[in-house]
Image (cartoon, rainbow, N blue to C red):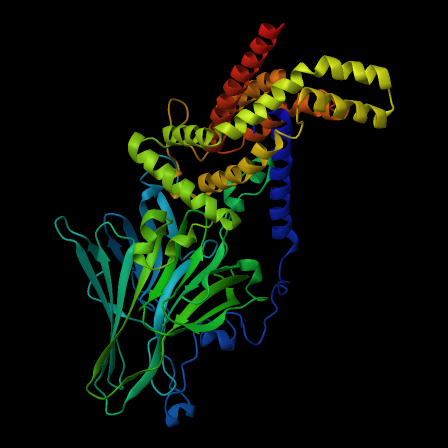
Amino acid sequence: MTTPRNLLLIALLFIGYLLWMQWQEDYNHAPAPAAGSVSETSPSAGSPAAANGADVPTASVTTTTAAAAAPPLSTSASTAAHVVVTTDVLRVEIDPAGASVVVADLLAYPQQPKDLAHPVRLLDSRDATFFEAQSGLVSANGAAPDHQSLFTAEKNDYTLAAGTDTLDVPLIWTDASGLTVRKVFVFKRASYVIEQRQEIENKGSASWSGNAYRQLQRVPPIVDTAGLKGYSNTERYSFAGAAWYSTADKFQKLKFDHFEKEPLDKSFNGGWAALLQHYFFAAWIPLAGETDQYVTKTYLAKARQGEDIRRYLIRTQSPPITVAPGETKTDSARLYIGPKLQGTLDQVAPGLSLTVDYGIFTVIAEPLHWLLAQLHKLTGNWGLAIILLVLLIKAAFFKLSETQFRSGAKMRKLQPRIAALKERYGDDRQKMNTAMMELYQKEKVNPLAGCLPMVVQIPVFFALYWVLLESVELRQAPFVGWIQNLTAPDPYFVLPVLNAAVMIATQYLTPTAGMDPTQAKMMKIMPLVFSVLFAFFPAGLVLYYVVNGGLGLLQQWIITRRIDAGETAKA
């Protein structure tokens, strides 16, 4: 895997893979409506339809009186201060308008290394980075508080106190008809899961029927794609969009560009709905036994500056709920807001760990991630864990690599004789190839013997690439000395230069017999090309390459010396 031929093939495959992904991003899009155009099903905020809630679902028809005109929604522009809740891992803001979670800071994940004063903001109410977790009730025959209705809070500041493990945050909505809804958010220590209860109390004289819904909506995340640095920005290759899970169809996902072309509209139980981005996500998780309607939608919303901004949402809507006079019923769900911690997500909900999206390499990447995590437990350093992982991979492929290097060493010994054949046959390539095959058979050398190890190891390389790309555990993880962030490029380009040195040394030991002159020239510039390319790649991935290439070079040098010594002994 470390010979120049193999590196060239890997580079071509990798670049081709990136180009294919970029082509998908640039050209495989659903046609977007022109700015300012509004479809009947997706009205713009600010239009009459939007004023009634373009992002508010329709209630199920559950009674004979449901066809009657529903009373106006008790909506109001929110001027009340947000309710701020702080735990040991989260700081969230709940807007009394709808009792929705509109801001969420992940306190353990700084935007820049060691800058805990500025944590990652996953949910945000600002137009440019809009991402909110909303919930509410809708009714076809009565009043109901949707995610625009004004709630009241007991206070505006809650903090999880030392020595306590849970924190309840209640907000209340009431209506003149006698309906009262108490929405309670329950926070737990060391948890990114927020439990939500909607307690529906009917003090009126008629039964109330409606549905509970929960939805996530946002604008696509902003990703730097400018220039070479933007091209190598790993965030641009990570999946961003909606995802959901059902016991029947398992994990499914939908890119933002495909929302209009492939909308979701299904009912199932035991599932969840999420919006994903690089390293982090938010998900609504209904009760396991509840059969919800899952839908995706996109619409145009009016920004504060006046321009239309396209938003994307995924929603779960409960079966009909009927509350008789004097009765109270509760709708429950959970909201996850946090990192893609693969080792703990399945404890939250089945299939939730699949939000760590390794694509087609999942079957290889998941065991690699598990092994890398175990090595980190042993070393306490992700850089050392990567080195140990390379050692284990090299040990697993030792015999294959040995076959490859033995073939290369024998080919190297045949270079003078192959050069003589070239001189003898000149431009007659047919006779030249025939003579070379006879020489290979006579010396019992298989020129293709080095291909199998490379073919076997390439999927492992790509799988490890995705592990390093998607693992939030490695985000901003320090190694040693000048490398304080394994997911950022090497600031002093030491690892790319070391990799170039390893490649040059490997070229010296690699046979070039029979190689096309153009290919030989490409081999000579490969160390420079890889140095420039790796200068913008995550240090963790370049570290893997340097260690893997260095071990391969050592193995190749030892095998070459043994074969040379054997030839000398025979002489």
